[in-house]
View (cartoon, rainbow, N blue to C red):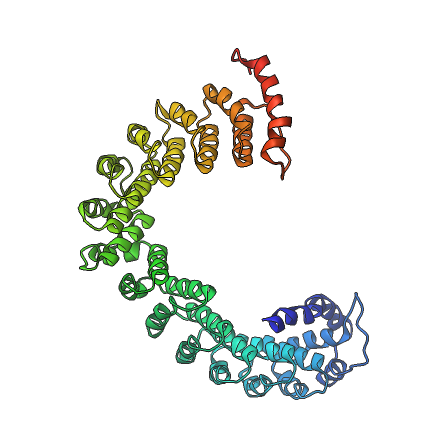
Length: 467
């Protein structure tokens, strides 16, 4: 990883040299031999305005195929900077004749040169797939990583077997690069290995495998549905997330999965359908609210707000009073997602639920449904025992924007938790148009001492309702 990052810095002069080389060609065209001598002249001094070696490399790219053989010879130069520039130029020319000499340089002792060679082979494309695949078996971790990334850039299906093996590499960097590369070469042979990688020991590899499966679209859906019953909870969650990313093409299979014998599959299929938001899912997902399994009911409740909007009010009426706290939590969130004022009477008892997470979601939902009692319920929540609920209530009142909340919000600026004070202050700014700033890092006592009095003073001058 370090070598690849530093490589881009080492070759930065080549970018600026593009313009300079153009000017040089216009005035004094040079032969290939002249340019190679300039490229390999290690005594040439680079300045901020010009790098003679990089200028030569860029001009050789412009010459094209006649420059391939001398550039390939320059790959054996004693100076790493020369070898790196030569590799870069060969990649830019993109001639298949450069594959063999570049492949040999993949084992160069200098990491920058190896990375330059891998990048050049990637640019050449399909003809370079075989040597890059062979490099995935090398003992050097950096080389294997560079090779995997380069194989993805070739886009060649012949690279898939080697990249699938790369998913089992002992080093996480190689597995990560292999998963990313497979996402750039959509191939059915990679689907099941990538699903297995959803349970990789490293989080970054798991996320990359999920991304790759999402890139494969509908073709990955059957295997992803199968992964909804995986023993690893993380793999199940990633499969759910990826199916949601696939979107509409996965809906038919997910609807069928709602009839699975496995409660795990039914639960996660319902959640994926909720994330997609397809209205076809509303009726079958609603039916899952009658199941005995708590997780199935919870995920079904959470899906209804996005699949049914206003239709979801009726089935969520029972869910918001479910014996399971998790079902009530997700039902409260779903009611908020409907944006329907009819949800407010259902959220009223939820805002006083024994479970703090239920109260939190109910309060957030009240900020989006905005029914006649929303302000009353949110003001009451400013006194909740849980500070996260109080903070959410202060924030929600700012979204509702009702001026009857001003006095309670002024009191909340002096809350014992600084997060509530910040949220209440921001909501007051929003409702009144009068801006009081609180510097970052103030504790609750400082906010109460130095900011609440400013609002009290404002209130004395404006409590008659005038702005």
